[in-house]
Length: 77
Image (tube, rainbow, N blue to C red; front, side):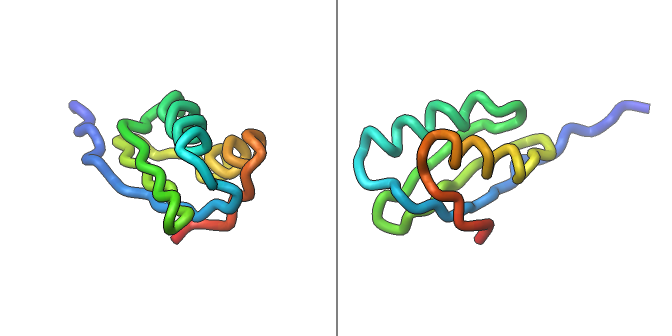
């Protein structure tokens, strides 16, 4: 039996402390390295991080990564 690959899914999380384009770039570049994450979009205005992924990703890992970078993970939208 051949396992079908998971279609792209979207996960939106909120985080505080994202103030500059440099902040957005740091978050984007770091989260892109998480296994299964295809793309990351960061909204400075809304303080939201949108991840497009094609594998099950661990929200706890995303939370830890954001917090370890010095930002404050708020939760999943």
